[in-house]
Image (cartoon, rainbow, N blue to C red; front, side):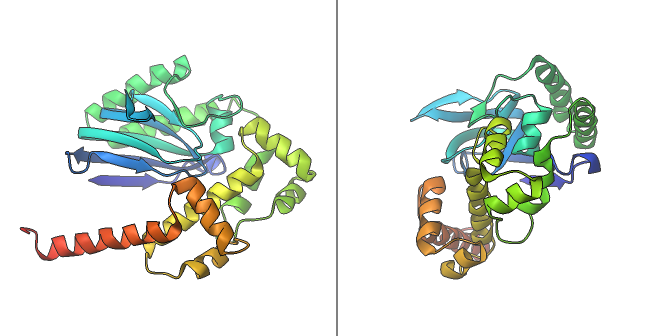
Length: 271
């Protein structure tokens, strides 16, 4: 498995979180992937044989270009053989503006604007040649060209506050920063993102929680809830169950078990 993350061009820093490339060979043992919800919208250029579950045990082939929108529940994918993806991780308002998504997108979208479909053929050709740097450079140039055609939008100003290392801000603080009332802020979010601001804040806290548990599965969850700004442990558990389908304790236990299995495998590869 190979994975690379690149910072976006400076002009796009409040619209795009990162550009990334991932390559992995999948067998029966590692064919299934679970995508947990987060606060980003992903644009992916895909080369390989991957299927996504749209309904219970009903899978659809993933095309060479797709948009993964905001989710409120995990998604399941199956991949077989060699898979490559070159992706753009957008802040939700960045994707809506640059990709002309109207009021946002939920879950997977496989029908994209003709311009994007045509550009995907270029990226696919570079992926087939394993020319990742040229693919990335072409993608950055294309994004910057889109950027010159869109008006600046107020929500780009809240990116640093929402994604700082501090606990998630209150809605009233975001509204105050933009000179809006809380009700006006919610209307702006609904128009530009398709979700209330409160939902985005909750998704950001959830993704911070999963990242923290992934980094240290043994940490005390009560302390983590406090660090992330949850009102109490009950709110933390409720949000985690909503987005992950399991409790934070079960998620942490699964991470600890995976680490233990990997440790034992590394000690005894033949076993």
